[in-house]
Length: 501
Image 1 (cartoon, rainbow, N blue to C red):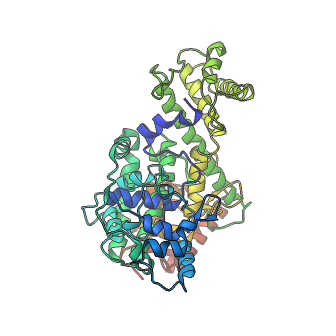
Image 2 (tube, rainbow, N blue to C red):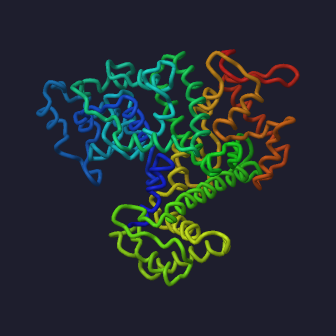
Image 3 (cartoon, helix red, strand yellow):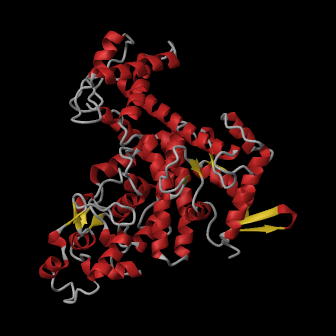
């Protein structure tokens, strides 16, 4: 058993997706989402060999030169090569904008605009299946899944990019991609009691967003919003699980619109994200402990871990049998074993003597997993995905170590439309309430007889002065007003939605 496999049983049975790579991109999520909804994939060989002109090391692939492609497909490419390179660079820049294309077709995901571009690539780590399950039945035209299915329809080119590469797309019989056992695992995981409130909230948000997609006719925008929804829902799911699925008790995500990087509200937002990650890791440790207590191997072929002792003479050999994450996945060297033993001692001191031995071991294993499995793990996975989709700032991962909730304009637009149905407007207080109920987001402007943002943040050890929170809320409204989604009226009344567009 490798350290990187320790949490796989928990991910599969209790979560529904695997945060196993820090390289998962929105293009991977889009590929998995459309594949799950249409239940099929097509042959993308001709498109791939046109767009991906290089082999390993970014060296030109002579088998994909214009001369080679003309010889292989004379019925597709014109005899003139005048604009071939320019068209190829243009298509590569658009379809490979997320840097998810590689020389191997099965490991590539296009920034797709049609269901005909879906590949076998599974680097979405089951997020496509997960998001599709939240979006409803594709056969029900009122669901977001139906909107995605229609927007990615393989029947005809509906946008300039799809039209550009249409001759390269395959219209032959599709290959079944209904999901099989992974789809069954995702469905079963989402049916667990601890996911019930989250699934209900996301289903409501998806239905609300679907009203906008039915009202507007831009298919590419529908796909964009659906992928944004999928990525944001993933981070919202981790936030919900950080409280065992009880949405009212989850740690808040403070969304910033005002203040510089070191302002009080920005620092509190960074700390709120870190709190979510720490509590999510704690929840994972709890689920892992429950499995260790059963006295059975975590994965097939491995040995069962000790669950009834804290004696280091037993624990240390068990830790030594877990293969390292790096290199050839061999048993850990002495330095790594000392580090794991340190995590165990720290967990024992932190949790105290009243907890069961399996809980101490599980906490130590999760800490070791997070430290050693540098290429994946929930913190890195969620942080990078959030940056790339535009929920966390700096966007596009950036260089700053600390991230905060500061959505880009497209993501903010999606969030509002997932809270306010098309053609309607609601008071600002209603939007703020729905942002919390559905996405766990707090802005700072909600304060009445039943709720106080400042008090709730302080309860989670995230104190922010009220003037800064109010300023943050004002900047939030300013942003929505500039987007055409909010309007201020007399007596300090603000309504939000596209009903006044």
